[in-house]
Length: 121
Length: 109
Image (cartoon, rainbow over all chains, first blue to last red):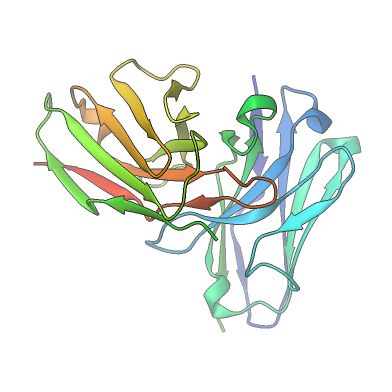
């Protein structure tokens, strides 16, 4: 069965960096794009962007350029989100989500369990 | 950027009753509209895509309708497990962009 398993919670100081992993199983990793979605405490869902798992080409949504980097290691079917120069407002749960592709491209049928990143001094 | 507005913010419904949730787009998104359910502490779950197509395993009591700028998610007879937050999402101009609505919380009346 399809699974996306994310790395565990992180507590970081302002200015530090964090790297969140999302390991996929149960399907061909390079056949479906991977997206990242942020959810601040008590808030709604915010799409951060996506990465083409075939080419490794990332696309970032407005507000997620510069400090945010999507990457892949296709040998272990894993997508990564790295955030640098962390700020308190980066405190959130970060989800990876698989794109359905084809006629339903842009919709997300499988999600990771989420990774809580807390930024605090 | 296309802005998605959901109403109401909170909907109080008794078990067994019908719930009707609305989602409005700031410009036409055709039928490129999805709905997700999120329970506390859990990841979102895809319910509906293409405005009206139920995702795999979603019960028939969930239905979606609409096109253009006005969309509705209907839960025909609320079960206890349906009390959650529901988000709409447009993907009309994906790639490269898509946006979520602010969510509607369905709570027990």
